[in-house]
Image (cartoon, rainbow over all chains, first blue to last red; front, side, top):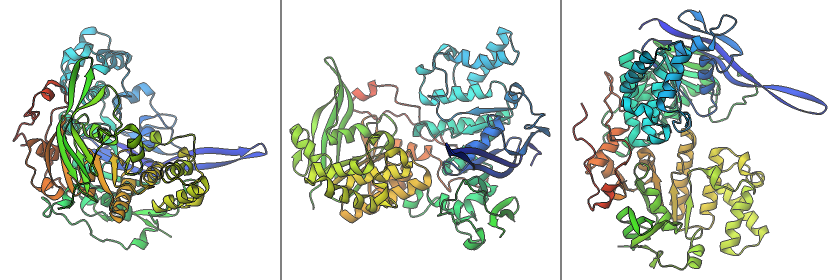
Length: 319
Length: 302
């Protein structure tokens, strides 16, 4: 394991929700992210899973600098990524980029592919037309498109090709970290495989680090090295992909895995049988009853993460 | 041998532009028995949704049926007068759509939208219908149905809205429920609940289901029989167990290999996913009688 290039420590994001009347306002806080800590190594794919509203996107946005953390620090290669010494947006863009969920909404319909890809290069001081051209050509080949397609507009491409353009745009500045926000969930099933294969190939080729946000656990299992399970703003379990998928400890993780409709459940002999129910701790010890929705307007109850196996952490109640 | 509830025979359907007819569905035939859950699976543009719209009689120009029969309870739905069809729709055949937010009327309460079903099809008055609406909400396990009945769709979460859709669809105890990707817009945990609800309620009342999805896992969880569609053709049909354990058609095999499966990753590395070519770009293959183009390179998995 190489040294982490990105470190997120005790990250909190709170949104103030002002509700009130003429006679004074009552302010309360929405606790979106509560004490999330993790690190990302070079060439690693870390996935954050959880249901909508659990804070996974907010966590990713703070890393991109699109959301200010209320508390906590993020550092990139030892340099602070937040606070007074934080890099500017331009500097940050060279380190972290994002691939969006919906390739139909995330490309400017009025810009040709060439324009979309050359704008970030120009903004970052590469002005020589020949170099821009060369880099676009290489990038398009990398993502499986042809250089001639650079003159086209987004509407001339299919969904899968658009997502390839989205990936090319994220990679054109050669960032080390790519945030993938549900990269395949908007795509048709026959195209998903291609994009997943492409993302894995590029990760190898360019030794990229991925931070993937997803609720599709089968994709997560296929792509990730490590997995972070979030539930209402907190990390409830984290570990290597085998630990999370083969020996899930937290009841929420187990519920999430059990909720996935699986083709193999119908086949009498699954090709790769694995035990899914290793009971490490009693349910009561987790403190959080995952069947009851926690109140996001209250500070979370006392709990802590304990290490149950090497690098396999699970949250239990500390009261 | 019981008689099928829905019998689609050699259905041809196309897009009529001027004098030309561009075929979209090619010779689709399948049957659904009373109380059976039948799944249609395939990628976007394969014709799954159009098939269901044809059953509901909701095709609009320029789409038109160019041949075949849709027999529902001994009646050919394609030749049924519009008036009769309207009476049937909602009462005998009901439908759940993918996006509950766009399918529900944002300007009226969910209670009113459920109550309409009882007024239109059972001749109840508003007072009775409202009471029945509360019962319907309770049946789809919406907590606090007496209070929720006055909510507008925007006040509900995605899962609750989909439950309301199910309540509307099942209000009049239909014989056939068409579910067009009912859980695609939902979270996994909510999806599991909604699927269980559809499964339980339909088993309880012996409602047959035509379940359309591109998620093979969802289909496997709900359906007894599955038909695989590709480019407007039904390329394979089998019982769910057989289809997934022993797929015959190369396209079905490609589909199964293209999706990462839970528990499918090996310790020492990933199996590369099978690459099915992107979308159906060549419309001309549809005009040929044999629509099964060898799009998948067999043995392309390393």
